Every structure is written in structure tokens, then in C-alpha cells.
Amino acid sequence: MGVLLTRIRSGSRLLTDYLCISFVVISTTLIPKFYNFIPIVPLRMILAMILALAIAAAIGVLLFRSMERNEKDGGFHGGRCALVLLIMCILALLAARYSATNGLQVTTADSIYPVPGKPAYLITLHNSIVFGITTQLLFTAIGSGYEEHKCFLIKLLKTMLYVALPLALFTFVFTQFIPRLWILQMMITVILWCAALMGNELVDGQIPAWIHIGTKGQQEET
Image 1: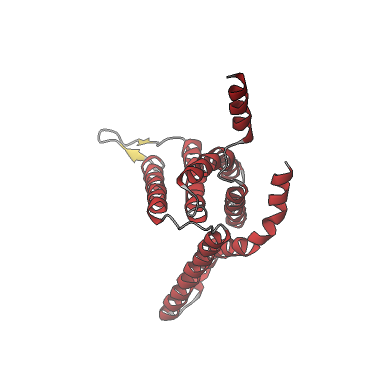
Image 2: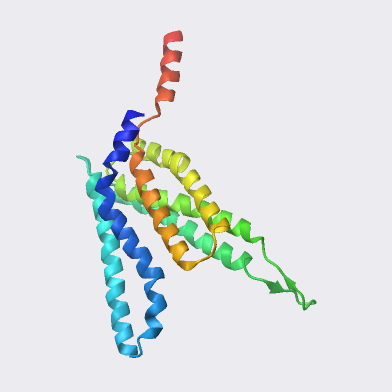
């Protein structure tokens, strides 16, 4: 418990990362709403390009700081991390396809009445689970690329259990039951992404103590 509290108190080092996340979320949700207020189209395009570069720079700073913060003597396992990121992209694409396929109403060939897709809460639950999983795949791949394969796999499994599941639950609750006001949704998005990063930083690649205790007891019995 003391180790956990120490890690939580040291979360101030993530302030720059939180600011980067906030900037990216605000830039992709709030600022586009004001594009139409710029009457000059070329100026609008130039500002959009500048904003896109700034977003890319903020994401780069976030990823670089995560790698630097967890850097170790060993080399960075790029191939393994690329595989994890590929899995993340596939899950995100499947989630988008699932929402697009099941979230719209369609009509049958012999009926003019719409056939509704799956209930909205199922789509929300599905996307919340994917969000929890993909964020932990991303932060683990980037931040723990220096870990040995065993520690990397242990951390990946622990983040799925300790971080991804609670994060998916909170995402579902906030998305399903909070009023759909874009300002409120923007704030919630920032909070969820920051929680995903901090939760990942709190998890290490060590085998849980209760497993060590169980193994030790078995060894003593033998």
C-alpha cells in the first residue's frame, strides 16, 4: 500500500503529459466547432494545418516522455511494440466497424419500416471495453518497450485487469448516463485519458505478491 501511495504522489511528474492530452482533446473537439466562423477558406486551411502539426507535436512529446520515463539499460523492443500497436489498431478499426454497422437503422427489401440496430447501451459498452484495452496496449507498448519479454507480458496482463476493466466501466457509465453536452463530454474524455495514463504508470511488470506467497508455501510443503 505504501508503494502505491508513493507512486500516486509522484504523479505530479505526469503534469506535462496531462497538459498534452488536454491540448489534443480540446483541439480535436472544441476548436473545430469554430472553423466555420473563419470566412476566408485559405486561412481556415492554413490554421487547420498548423493545428494538425501542433497536435502531432503534442502526441510526440507525450510518447517521448513516456519512453524516457521508463528507459532502462536494455534496448527498446521495437518489433514487439509494433505488434502490440498493430493489435491496438485492429481493435480500434473493428470497434468503428461495429458501431457503424449496428448503430444505424436499416430497412429490409420487403418492408418500409426501419429495423433498428443493436441497443445503444451495447454499442456504448463495446466501445468502452475497446477504449480501456487499446489505451493500455498503447501506453504499455510505448512506456514498457525496454522491459524484458516476461516483465512486459506481466505488465500487459496486469494493466488489462487492474486498469482496463475499471476504465471501461467508468467510460461506460460516463458515456451512457451523463448528459450528452459536448463541453462535459470533452472534460470527461480528458479525465479518462489522463486516468488511463496514470493507471498504466502505477502498474509494474512484477509478479503479484500473492502469487509469490502461494509459490513459497508450496515450496515449503515440498
